[in-house]
Length: 205
Image 1 (cartoon, rainbow, N blue to C red):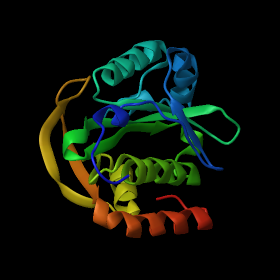
Image 2: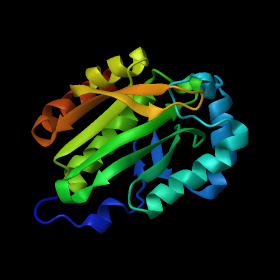
Image 3: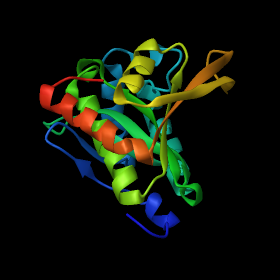
């Protein structure tokens, strides 16, 4: 999209889909399925992530929808090709005036981690951000302790901007240091070609 930015458009729920994955707007009725997905691998045990226990899935969904209502986020459920919910992701830190947003709060059931599903999901989110919303930059963040996620983000073609020390309080106490990566609008064509290659070869970043 070229020209003026419509800030209300940036926070509108949207459906994104490809043969490998679909992203649909998060709804309250998705809480139970998200709880089951989180149970595959007991993802909440990873202290540096924000994955809900099955018992807290409804609270997790409510918080995400409150963020959407405030204009801060657009949350999605992630579905595999069969239509089963296998995780969640969202646009967040939305700043339409400065043409920037973050792709974050991303987690997947253990059975689909490090598969082409993640590649396809990132491709859909980045394409929509740059080609439809007109973003100038897209951020991706992760804990300094999450080496797998850091490597995956770098393989997408994102560049590391820096580390935010003591950035977030952890549920069990202490703080998380956050690594910030970004992709600029001018870098998107090269990143897009890389993602297309990964999709064609069935690889995961």
